[in-house]
Amino acid sequence: MKKAVFAFLLSFIVVASYGQFGLKVGANTAKFKITSPNQAFQEAQESNWGLNVGIFYRFKIAIIYFQPEAYFSSTGGKFTYTDPNVTSATEEIKSIELNRIDIPLLIGVKLGPIRVHGGPTAFFTISDKSNLENFDAAMKGTTWGYQAGLGIDLLKKLTFDARYEGSLSEISNNVTLPGGTTLEPSTKASAFLLSVGFMF
Image 1 (tube, rainbow, N blue to C red):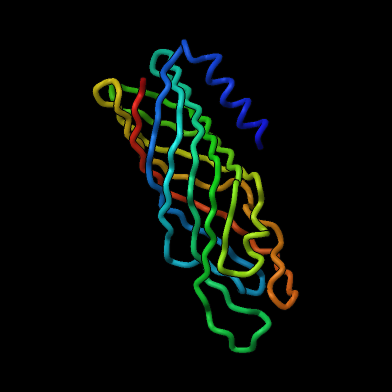
Image 2 (image 1 turned 30 degrees about the horizontal axis):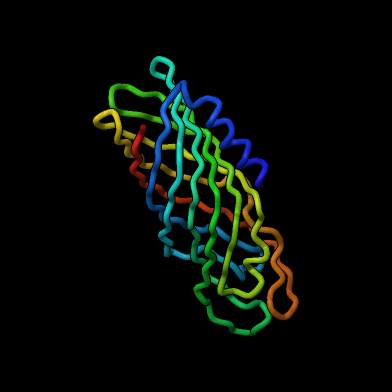
């Protein structure tokens, strides 16, 4: 992960004179879609709020632009859990919190101040925490997803974005629960992101 982040930041330096750098900060509301064959896991209806802060670079040719980004993201989600080892167990709301480095590689079209963009995103998990024992240990270190959304630029410096983020890969491995039961849940995350940025 360190090599990938270093290479990404180095590319920023090489192409800096051809476009604009920017800083951005924003919020995300995330939701986990998690299911398992025995229905021990199910999607909860609640979402988690998190923070995004980082940098971006924009290179524009006519109305087309390329915008790689790198930012720290605190995110997570809630899910329901029913202990498969307990007869008549009740559903419990559990949660997972993730701290990640997210690297979207966006391609967009800019018409006047309005932008439309999308592209793949790499997620590198730095740390994770769950109130369900052993669930955090099942989180994968690197996963892939995508972002798509709209933006608007004002005063040649301010930039505002609203995006949807989805998963292209499972974000967890098999989970060994208390009592020794091992499950293979299908776990994917989605999020809505709002951000404001300043271009130099």
